[in-house]
Image 1: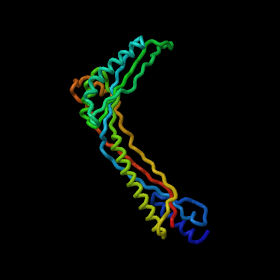
Image 2: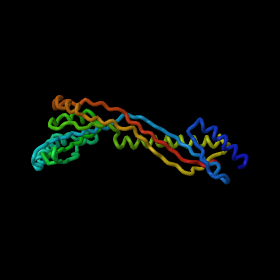
Image 3: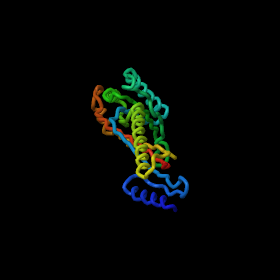
Image 4: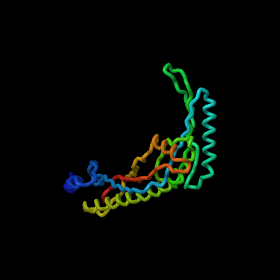
Amino acid sequence: MKRWTWKLAAAWALWALGGNLSAQSLPTGGENGQVVSLSASAQKEVAQDWLTVVLRASVEGNDPSAVQNQLKSQLEQALATLRPQEQGQALTVRSGNFGIYPRHGDKGRVVAWQGQADLVLEGRDFVRVSQAAAQVPRLTVAQALFSLSKASRQALESEVQSQAVQKFRQRAQQLALDFGFTGYTLRQVSVGSVDRPEPILQSRAMAADLSGAGPAAAIPLAAGKDEVRITVSGSIQLR
């Protein structure tokens, strides 16, 4: 191995112990001996701006057709109550899952039919969404989820990605200078994102809140924050 190559490898090994970069062991000779792998990350936390509430109607009976008709009736009544209150991104109302399933007894025979129908309320106006959910007493709250709206998440991911790319470029340039090179050439790069898991409020307790709150009372909910973290990793050719 040439003397300058040995010195470069030794210096790199010592320096890498204190950082997040790593050197690739590539064949010696030519430019392959100056290939380095590195990564850089950026993250940002912002307040959640979107609330999704799932209301659920549940019916059980011996006749699947009768169960279906009851579910359909409850869902139509709920939609008739809530649809006039829709207002752009502040509140939207749509139907969700709808299904009828057999309930089996101890001997495997069908003893009844169970049906569930979901109504989904979403929007930026948390008070409006929660008050609307409380206006349908025959439906219980099956789930409540705070998150980022699609537009907010796209903007956040774009901002964090730009920060991560800039950090990667700065680190790559500094690495090249530290080893006595004037710059670098990008060989390969990958971008990955990690989102903080969104909290889901499964709510038997919330269903009780709903039933006792009265038709005009809002369901007690509080939003949190979402975090997006993006990592840019790749390899560079020192030059």
